[in-house]
Amino acid sequence: MTPSDLLQPRYLGWVVGLLLLLCGWLVYRVLRRRGTRLDQVLDTIGFDHVQDLVLPNGDEGEILVNRLLLTSQGLLVLEVKEVQGTVFGSDKMQDWTVIGADRRYTFPNPQPALYDRIAAVRAVVRQVPVSGRILFLDGAEFPKGVPSMVTTLDELAGEFGEASRAAAEVKVHAFRPHWDSIRARSTS
Image 1 (cartoon, rainbow, N blue to C red):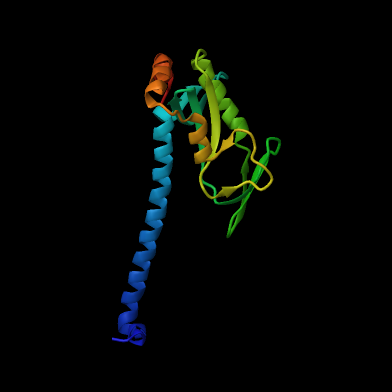
Image 2 (tube, helix red, strand yellow):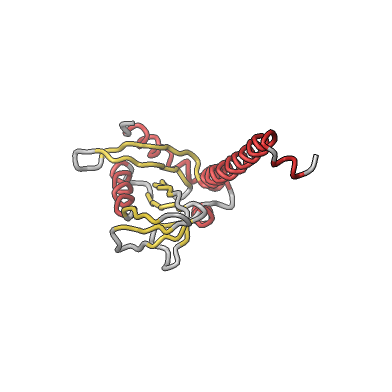
């Protein structure tokens, strides 16, 4: 069989099917690796986590905290953004713009919502340090500078990682009662 034989109608379906299968496998591998890397970093810096935690917001309402991690530095409110492309945003801009390979779109500045989530967590655990970050996964670039509270996976691991897991566990032990308190107060 020669390469030109593969282009005949009786073989063309098989060739196209194999190519689609190969492309699907490659897409699966890329997406799986991205999720795995996020999970690895969160497991490295966090000793426990909660997703989609609903807390009182202080104004007779509720607020959704997407991810909350118990770290050796206290509690970390984390908002994950999966953005591919160039991001134009700053602390003072109301909307941020993403210019990707095939589209352009805007989304609201995520910082005010993050501040509200941090405040809701602090209202429950006053004795524990609470910080927040907006995590942009690989694929986002900020050519005009990175706004405050925005981070990457590598920066997050460097900022919240500990050289000694045993030493970090001692710090986390002091935060554990407050962590249990926030889990108990959630309405989720």
